[in-house]
Image (cartoon, rainbow, N blue to C red):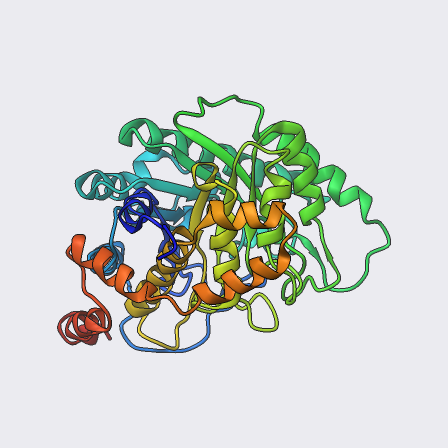
Length: 402
């Protein structure tokens, strides 16, 4: 009716690899047993079945991947290292401490992405890491970020699949500071040291992630969006845009085309904030659809890496992963079945009435049938059938965990 090739849309969607976040499965716990979360991070709820070991976490992830059409990735944080019971501080981490993750990724054809973990650690207790006034603290976190880049490059080489290593730090003040400049000068110097060694972009891509505010840093965040946008544009690193890291009424969709004029690629962290950066499970709302539309309408899918970033401990964690991932894929498919060239021609002609009418008409078209067909083609559950599998998995696996 509107000239959209749905088979082509499905083929395009099949090339998109979401990077699922390991921390949904264990409430951002990691395997260091360091105690409570810090850095303004909070996972609320006590739904039974949380992964307690890396093997349990990988089994849960296997179940999630089996419910998603397409081939997808894993986003791994540094404190999910497996050190055989030995104490290995974060600045001493090596690729060998992630050997089991790498073997699992190879066996299942998953790409791996990586993140230094600059929170929930005694040397982050002051609330400052790479921007700390304490040189020893800064050096520790510089060393950790350098080690993380090497681990990411190792993943990229071994898998033949480029790893994106993303740096986020929690540094900031609860109340308004006197000196806003000095911490940013320190952060810039720290990042310069972290990125001194050039790594082949075939193996590792560096990304830096800003934030407006967080718990405990309501008034000033050192690594703001403006800071990292300037740094990424200057040094041609990836810029990370997290859907929860801005003002609650601000959409990251509008930032994508602006940033991609000046940086080579972008990393997206798809999340959902409710009044603050609360990392709720992604739903198929206007904000998610706006992000997907911008990626497709702008032709940006080849320049944007899409990862999920939320954690809800109040519901079944496997379901949380699955619901958010399927919604992200559905939003992309909804954008892919728009008559984009027709819409663009109408807009450029100045006929905004026709543009509005067509956009509204599209909302009533049977998109769901295309999504169901996509799931059928990939041999994954259609509609609510995926919940039947999750409930069976909960009875068989999750309910056995104390």
